[in-house]
Image 1 (cartoon, rainbow, N blue to C red):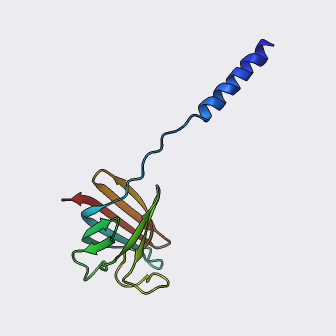
Image 2 (spheres, one colour):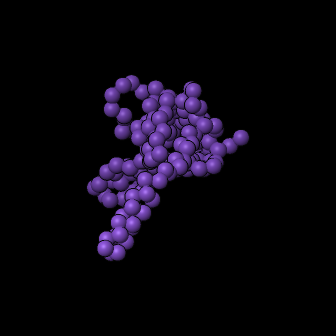
Length: 143
């Protein structure tokens, strides 16, 4: 009988602890002006060599007007702008500067599609990968 009561006590303790209310961490929405680097890595499937392109960027984020990629957009990165949606793991960018349909995979890179991200304090990092292309944004909030 004592073993049954002890087992029941353990089960009840586990249920109570498991049902305890957890405090949710509020989702931080990136806003403000960020400056940093963009890196694109491309794997050539024939030569198995990796081609690297880099550019310095300034990106502004506003909860009401969306995002805009600024600074030198003449060579590596296009001057994208549009809306963005954030969840705890991913951020999705909708680039209003390209026509509807698939995102172009040739030419200058655009800030469009779904990225994994890290955002805390003044640090904002974005990453996106597929078979042969990787995109990395390493940004810091600036005044």
